[in-house]
Image (cartoon, rainbow, N blue to C red; front, side, top):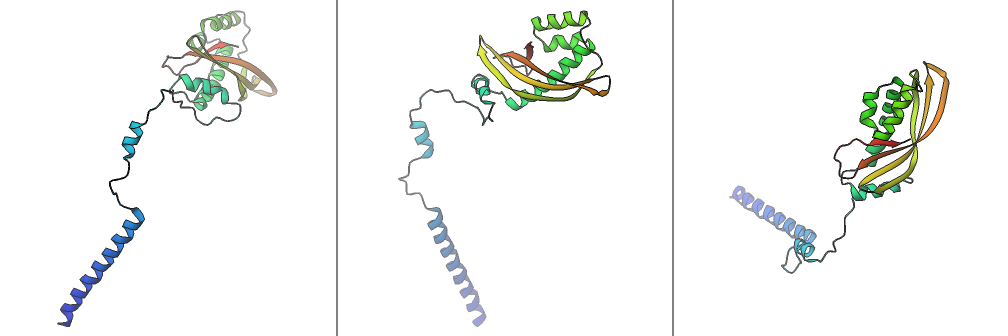
Length: 193
């Protein structure tokens, strides 16, 4: 009989522990009394003013001008834009130096292409130049006007000629890239140098 009483005693102990745990959880987590406001209802019942929500991320010092672009372009990413601008700068300079008009035509506005084309035709390009370093020195200007966005960057590059690093020259350029606001293409065209 003693053995059977232990099973019964074990069940009573486990039940007491379960009741205690439920009591403690209820005290910690609380219970719905039916008087709480429904969080879903309270959000939808509030009158909201129709203001445009911005998707502008935290911008570093000197990058604040990009907020104008974030206000009008949903999927803009200034970090990707700056990396793309560096890539475009190198691609454009290399294409210009090699006289590659086909590549230039896809990266430049019509007016800039005409001036680059003329310079190539007059042999003002330098086929032997190569890049040593390339950095974005700053965001000079951001303009949103006439359904276009124009971003002007200060680009600092070091280049050398004919594999001779003793000929390194440092250059500073102001380049403006533009794009139509509603254009879904990721390509920004060089519109001014």
